[in-house]
Length: 321
Image (cartoon, rainbow, N blue to C red):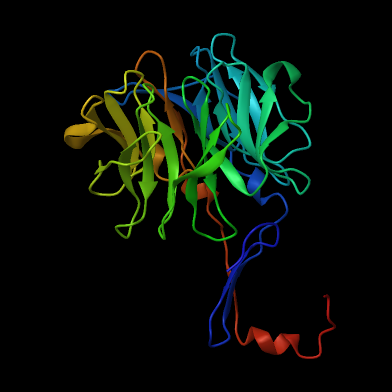
């Protein structure tokens, strides 16, 4: 299979090709709204311009949203002021992914994959538009900062489709494995008290939410039982939210014992949560959520092309390699 500017395709062993001829503006066609959602599920659109938004991240002071605009050729980071309803571009000439806030609120951390700078990078908000500083010099993605700013958890791909969790100690510069196995780990989120981290793993055959001690990762407890992605901690670390199907679920958590209390329960469900790349929500200071609108039927490809015996068309074709 393949995707991107060339479209998406899948070829069978019998010689049949299924192809969607996407244009170079394929990634620009989505226009997603940003909502505030009350714990009761009441939705109110925020005054954010329509773009292909994803990965909303609330600033430590609760006044701004960091948003990633999926675009072609480079994804762009923007800052939305919740009080003044202004949306300001932060990145230029860099392909930005997986944005998170530094706990100081003065810097942002994200992943770059622009061919010149590949890895986890950091940028001062006062220097928006300037070249970011490289923190991790390999294919990786920022996941979570500890609240004291010492530890950064990041995703390491290791040149494969399987990801592991690594840890950067900013005091010593040491980088080491936090959690690595033959399964895929990701979506790590350090708890606000710094004692635990939540993450996803597909070790059961599908993504589920787990919690381990931090920074040692010695203990492990499973939180979800019917699938789960994108864990987000409540500010007091006594509740853990995660995406499950077309909704957000939560489980009470005892930060002293490091155990969930009872079973997880849905907080709200909505068709808007049906599909969004990466983590589509975050918590707002008043206990409500900020949520990126999910996939719509009108966004889906309108037509596909079937080519029979497609390999025969290559006979005698000049080489392009």
